[in-house]
Image 1 (cartoon, rainbow, N blue to C red):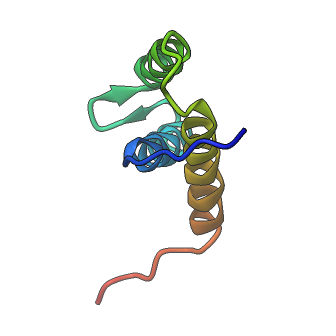
Image 2 (image 1 turned 180 degrees about the horizontal axis):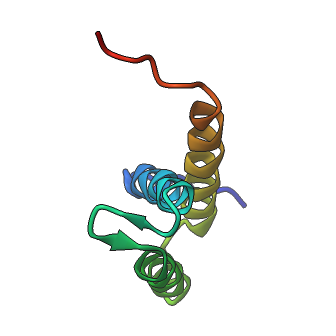
Length: 83
């Protein structure tokens, strides 16, 4: 059977995935965000999603992985220096 879901939580997970890559690329700290804090937040978000039968976990995992992949691709392009 097929289910329809609506929401922006997959996009939120995408942002979390992209932020995770930024934290890793900045040697474990990006601003006030540490790698430990990011991992804890992501694990907690996935855990709470798995506790509910009405949450579309595939959208969450897909968003997280998409954010990671897109940020890794963007990180391959060097920054242009400002004049």
